Image (cartoon, rainbow, N blue to C red):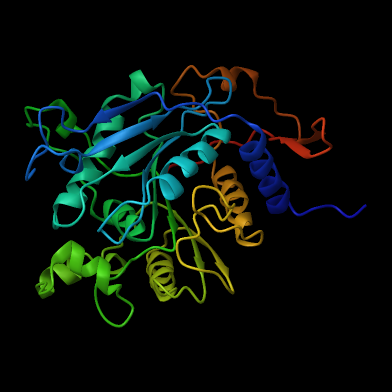
Length: 341
């Protein structure tokens, strides 16, 4: 019998987990600024950025967590397809997830960036309560949410040590970044006009266009990235991912890409759930991403938390298992923790 490539095996595992496991309800929705967000125009729900919390099962928890930034062109949020569903998938890997509801148009830069940075600080400041490793918080984003995620990855800071708000004293650098069909640049022919107008207005100044063209803000300290995109994406040109990948590579930053020859924009997990199209080939990307995360040590138990998964993890090779319907299951082998990028 011909052996399956590892990426396909992992993809099958993810598909089975999403199909057969009953999703747990999120723990809570928490406001990033309980007393009101800076720059809020009113007191409506749209002006109250928040995190919806999807904790990992304690028996699987690796200590790794992510902030998820749904897309929507900085006009709205595809928060189910590119937020909640992605969080449930990451939970199957032992990763805690926090879906960010950030402010969009008529809000303008830097509101969106500040919401996302605050989310990173908030999760880090509450790491003990969330039972996660504060040094292993990544960021995930799709479309315009991919721009927001890459903005945090390239514009992070160390926090303000003198801030009266203890959350603002936290740094906001992500541990890694996963970007789905992301908007990256605000300049030139590859820019997504709708996202740019919603973020910067119809007459943006050149300095803002340069500052938020994230391929131009990469440094050697930018976190490692995984990017997925359809080569013929009609909404956000694949060149966005290409120029970001090349910029990361030129600075010595690890980046893995998965480009599909054909596919729509906004495919999410491509599994036919919550508005995502049912595209079996593209639906392999979560498994490929999981393999990348495993190889880089992001799915190994953190030594910074007392995770039950860390105590029960075996150093034996991966073993194949089948469920009662004959579908493939895999128990991952232990992978050594690699240094932070």
